[in-house]
Length: 93
Image (cartoon, rainbow, N blue to C red; front, side, top):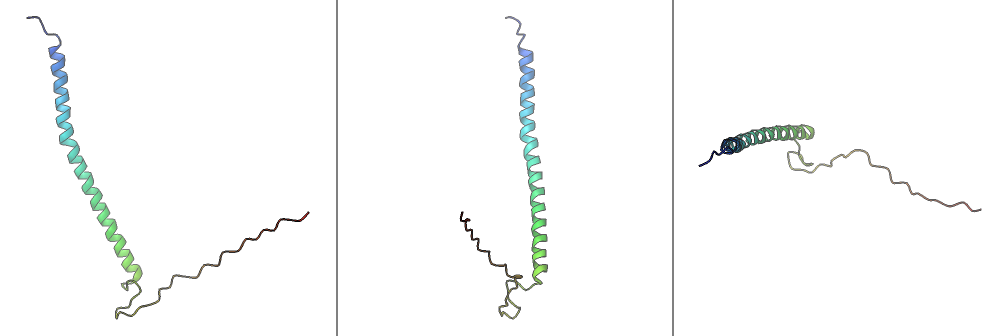
């Protein structure tokens, strides 16, 4: 049998590829899960802040109702002015 000069480099390359594959499937799912958990916690915190701000803004009343159930007119601010009518008359020469 002859000397297989290609066996050592191919074996080393195969070992590197196997190590990289194992590392990839071990490391990235863990990192993905940690990042996903951090994103969910951040979104939950922002949702809680948004809900608290909305409750503070409405002073606990809700959608235009008093605590006794009577409807209340909601003030939306001043009315917008009507859109001006654009009339263009070309000059007569």
